[in-house]
Image (cartoon, rainbow, N blue to C red):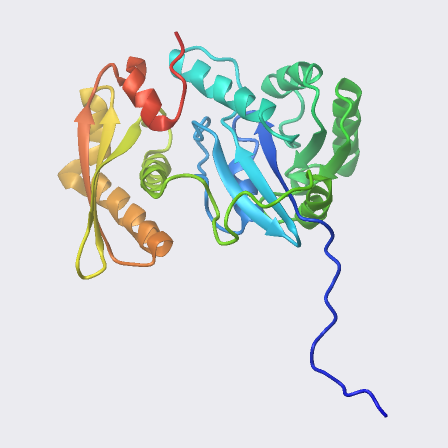
Length: 311
């Protein structure tokens, strides 16, 4: 008697189910949002060259084999000067201390100085597994890169170091393979097809805020804020979204609107295009610009952003 061949491939042993939170921290513009979008495989955090773009903890969810890795993209950590700065830095450290593992991302091109040096100093007293990620490795010479790795590991006892490029993906697969085996054993915390815990309305507001920054660059202070005031599901399957862009000065309003409304139209078009890709349906986006001089000191605005209001 002979065995009957089958078309079924043997099932690979992927090990026990694992799930956990991984906090990505670093100085502003270290590349955290770019990295988390790459690791998750789609956009969950806004990206711009403007510093302190990420304001609150944004979680992106990636599934690798039998592990669910929940990345927390935290605001850049810097020396706070204003109330909003303090709220963002507090959110970053709070997100780190609530995680199962902390991953510090350092811009190799910028080196270890200023904010990065202060973060390393504070990490010494955080008793969690810690991983060092040296980003932008394609932009520095190897001897400089190895010297930075040595400097960082002398300052903090990191469990592992990875040399990566968030932009082109170098080293990211090795990093993900490490994470999937280091998370705590346990059931997955989110459905397999969920990529973020950010409510879709908040994500829609964040997309518009990103387009404002990309369009205006350094012309507009980063304190511009976007809120969704209306969300109407239409019978034809499309959605009508009303958003308000809050700025602090009348002069800023003219910047956002532009001559004959050309700037606000460009922002709206770019945001609507991305929202249609995200929601996979037609979007009718209406943007309004309002001056709210003291919104940066309004506790309600902080709740909208998911931040604690600093006293």
